[in-house]
Amino acid sequence: MRGRRWQFYVLAPLVVVVFGPFVLAYKLFFGWWLNPLLDRSYEKRLREQVRTDLAFLFHDFDGRFVPNERTVGYATLVTVESADLRIVVSQHHGDYGISVARRESPEIKESLASVLEAVYEQEGSRRKPSYINLAELGELFRENFSQVQMALSKEHYSDTAAAINRNHQLGMQKMAQTFNRPNGYFDADLVNPNDLAKKTPK
Image (cartoon, rainbow, N blue to C red):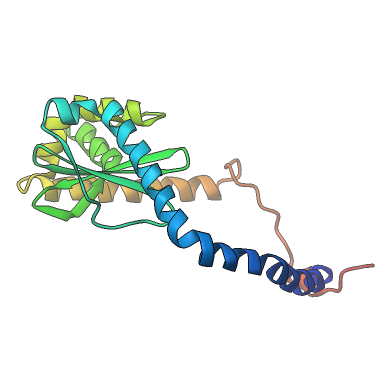
């Protein structure tokens, strides 16, 4: 480990010296106008996909795109108001997510997958929503739209939030059990601290 430290201290400054000017030049001459253009292009593309994969929001519930309340540097967001819900769709590389909230209280939002799990639990099932892309998640949303509305309503939201928190805690406990059991998914070598203090043999 110690033998590699000198490489870090020597190479890291060289990387900064070599690539730093290029990064700075990009930010000064290109980034300030190119990045917003790219962001708008990504957002337009995501809007088109949302209009296709979540078409029912627009056809059945008078959905419309509204400006995003915030921006996230690592993801592209679009926001839709449909019926009495405010829906935020996010994309990061190939991963999609949907958060849902009541239009009158958009700050109280939940992951759609978590709400669907709570809905299934209320119906007597312990299954989790299963999907591989935005279209499949949109289909689950379409099939359970009224249930999602009810789960987020003032009358039922406290129960929904409790179920989401409970399922989250159970998920964390299962992960911890998987990590700690002998045949778990994680295999870590035990290291003696005294061995770390010994000098690396030449």
